[in-house]
Every structure is written in C-alpha cells, then in structure tokens.
Length: 217
Image (cartoon, rainbow, N blue to C red; front, side, top):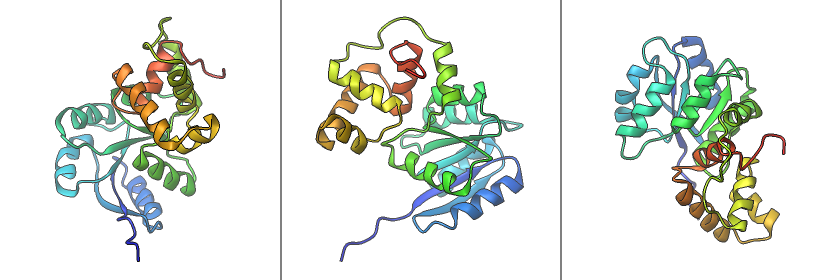
C-alpha cells in the first residue's frame, strides 16, 4: 500500500478578516491542502512562517503596515527554505503584483476567483512546474522590455522558455516537444541557470522584459 502524500501546508495573509475566513473555508474543502495559520499584515509574516512552516503563502498585495511586496522581499532574503508565495489582489492591472512577482513571488490570483480556481492555483504553485502569470501581468512585464536576448540559450532551450511563458507544465512541454519529462526538467534547469532565475516566474519575466517573448505572439 502506497502512502498518500502529506497535504500542502498553506498560510493565509490578508488584512481583511472576511477574506481570510473565506479563503480558509475554501482551502479547507480540499483533502490535499491544509491551512496551518493566518496573519493580518506583512509584519506578522516572519513569526507566522517560523511557527507554521507552510509550503505556500497566500498573501495579499496591499496591506497597511508592511505590504505583500515588502513581505515577499523579506521572506526570500532571510529564509533558507522559503515557501512559495501566491499573491492575491483585487486589481488585475496592479503594478504592485508585478513588482512582487519580479521580487520572487510564484504566482498571482484575483480575490474574485472562483473556489475551484483558488484551489487549482495553490496546487500549481505548490508543485512548481507550471505558471500563474496572467495576460495583464505579461503586458506589464513587456512594458519594461529591453531589446536584448535574455541569455545564450540553445534553440531547444528557447522553445522550452516560450512554452514556460505559455504556462505549460513540464509534462505538457514534454508532450508538445515529444521529449521525456526528465529531459524537459534538464532544459528548464539550464534555462533558469543561464537567466540567473530562481524559478519559472523569474525566467518568464526575463523573457518578456528582454522582448524574447512578446504578449500575444
């Protein structure tokens, strides 16, 4: 008998109590996810992480004392094993969200998202093999474009990066390019190393900012 994987540990950070209650209720419906803690401000994030050690931090962008951008930078600069950070916001066209993704957050989610979309987003970010990078944020990244190649990528690595930018998982990229999943993982690792990116989100931001990938292309 194979033991089931432990549930993904999620912490929720939002200054609105009603939002925290709603998100916690939604996450609690999933057997593969468990809410391990809550906080009302970015200032409360360090002790929350020390106490609960979540896999995913679901965090509001705009908070009164320390916002999600500042909290993201602090977590990634100080934690030896940081959680994946999923930013939540009311505003789709939010430069704060883009800045947080640029700082190292792994994905972006609107507060008006349906419950099934919220659950799927947490799972995607926890797995780390796909991307939550919607069209509005792609356009923001492209607005900062500098016309230069992002790195000396091989032709195959360039193909992989473009498919990463489309949000495809490793398995989906393997299917599209008729490659083994392990081969795709190797290419992804090479892309991240050449771009100096900590994860897929950072790699895709670099692809848009350098004009290597153009929104809608």
